[in-house]
Image (cartoon, rainbow, N blue to C red; front, top):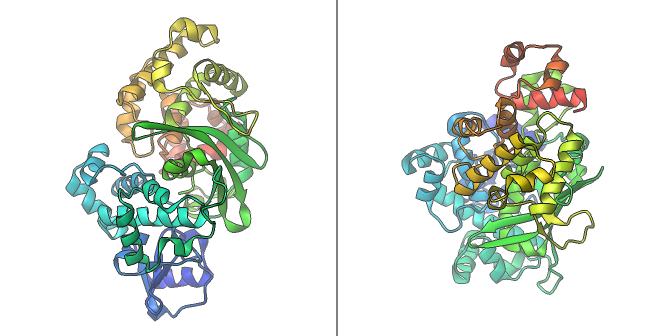
Length: 477
């Protein structure tokens, strides 16, 4: 990764949010490292050391700033193959996917060798994956201690530490503080809900994002208003399924999203926050996209590509939307949820079920789906998706191999190029996905030929998914 000292100093002096999460600064006079947006007093450039990750700063002996809180920095986004691989590994680590496994298992999951992963990871983040993993566990624990009232023992377990003694010792060694020393909320406080902040790089077209999600919300599972988004959650972690709900609101002045979740999700906080980051595309770099797309992006700065909280759920929703209106697809998704989903108690009248699992829909008969109004072609597609996800053949997450997953999707009955690209765009988080046969895209470009649409889109690479969102927004899709 680039580490131009002068550029970093300028970004630090300006508190430039475009660089938030892209580098961290260690201050030799204090022994503390910060985000570039930190509002502490100015430091001398000679005292600054710049690092591509929090883990790299900690490896050099720096402690995290208690004011700007490096654990809140936005994540990453890239289309470059080595960077994408390294960032996929980082995302899995940050989202708690490696709690009970080592780097070898991580490399195998990403379809690469242990050696190659270590090489590209060190080049991207400045440290080995193991060091990055340890830092992320400590930063998650720091976040839980600061933002929740969970007992220290639960914090240690949720952050992936198998031993409270080991957690306490490492926390004191690395941060020179007792875990309870940074606690803001007493353990005696109510724990029925947890609140967190997730940062993004401004601008953020929040109204457009919510509008997109609102019209596609699955009844019983999701609900969105002009100000917030909420949904039910079912996360399998280890041998248990953790069920609850989340609510997401925008804090524009702080450039953050506020995430509130039920206390029942305490042990899967990193997984839930990781999925929120994906859904709201918090790793986006708006300045880079606008620079590439030009006037198209400047008409609505900060427009994101809505991701997916659950890839299988989103894929089923995409199949249901084939060649029918968005409203009709939403109705079908609600029927499927009520018929096959699990009821759940929440504080919200409009959140009543979790979405059906792949195993449940794989076992659904054609008659059961047919009675809900699902056509035979869509039945085959849904069951194909369900069987693929249930068996592990399909992994609809951003860390999946894009080309291989597209090939698997195209081989399923009822999954054409439009559906495959749409799933890649949202579930896989692939920024260059492009549903070129989409009617609204062709209409927005004044074209009737998908081939000509593809030709015109060449100049938008590698951000064609963002170009699609701008075209759809212009057409109010």
